[in-house]
Length: 112
Image 1 (cartoon, rainbow, N blue to C red):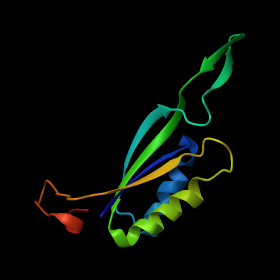
Image 2 (image 1 turned 90 degrees about the vertical axis):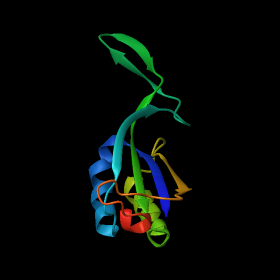
Image 3 (image 1 turned 90 degrees about the horizontal axis):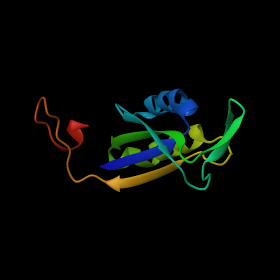
Image 4 (image 1 turned 30 degrees about the horizontal axis):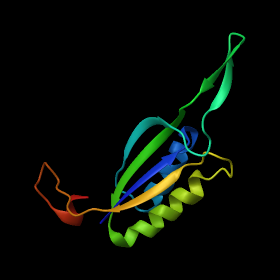
């Protein structure tokens, strides 16, 4: 199994969620986060004063899928979240050693 962690622009969340569901994702975790990468933040003007925004709002998706579905999920996120502008996000893929469904005690892919 694989854990796919993706950071995307917030306005792309619903579009990415729909595409992942169509591609076979059965669930996901979503967290609102702040961070920076190549963007290094930006400046904004508020009430006439300019100030630096060092952390940019993002959304973090976490999806656990079988090894067979991993490439399809990664491609779906990449294609759907892409705007072609700086700050589109990142995708990380980690191995999952075990998964357990708390309610039933199912383990492995059945727990996902």
